[in-house]
Length: 96
Image (cartoon, rainbow, N blue to C red; front, top):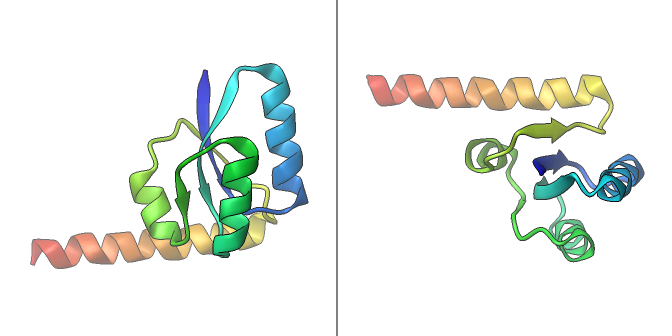
């Protein structure tokens, strides 16, 4: 079974989860959404109990094998790049 995490709650995300469920080899492990209501709806709909509203916490906490990024790639990369910079800055400040 492949456990995966999703970033976003749009139609592309919905289509991906439905297709993954058909295989019976994928299981939604965690979900990041910027809106608490959307996160709760997806959690109920697809049976996950790990929802995150802060991307940094999602990336640091969720133990996942694969991330599905159905957001437009430029936006996704910009968000991830910013979050990784924040992680790096946080780690550097701990070393000082």
